[in-house]
Image (cartoon, rainbow, N blue to C red; front, side, top):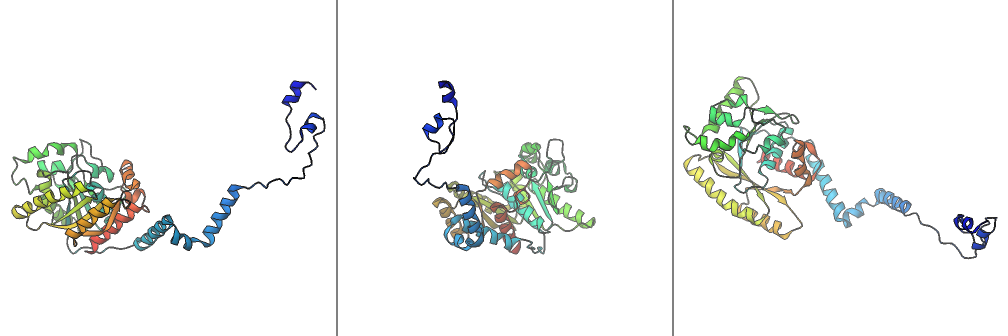
Length: 349
């Protein structure tokens, strides 16, 4: 055997060097006890089986993650198949906040979806030129579609505009298009410019009664983040205001200004309007700031703030990209459960 052959010959495990040089691969005898190899995967699997078998209660006591999972399971069991009462008359909400990015559209579509899933008749009116509520409900809102713009400017009946949500029965939507961006200017010269949406809703209610359609239980109007004529039309058409508040300091500043504007609407245009519901959104329980903002809002509005709090949730953010609400995208997520709880509170008030 050449030296190159000897160097390339594979040496079996536990074979002495002298044996490797010889032709017979006889295992070397060693008096030292070899350490036993431990299969970490087998140990992990065994521990997992034991945990699932008899330690769930102990985990609930000791693990924050397990406690959170157990809490969400109890929420699901409590909300599953829950029926909500029908209101005695149609309740019309304006979902508004002058600060952008606080969850107005997300709150509108998800609470509407939760109520409709419980068998109630719900209409969403999108008067935000961005049309995000229309997107979330899977409604076409390109420039060629008849929209709420045609209702406000061209007196088109609301019945010719509304479209059913493809994922949820009992839920219909009047979409918004980019034409709404110029509606603020066009409304200035029109007669009774602040009451046009209210009259359109009244005519649509009579149309449904004439056609034998069920009465609407809830109407939600999604507003742009400003106090222009579109938002004023929404305030004049509604009897209740739902204010989503992000759990951050800037949201408190926007809330005080919004309340002043609502008082002005109540005084001059719609005396029946009231702030009935405040929902805390984007709540991060890991921060002291979120808890402080929530406590301050509850202190000033003890009767209006819902007990349900909407957390920051990736699922809520992902749902619109699939043209869905979180109620259909991931109904078991913490965000969906929070909106179900909020809808239940609103219905039972």
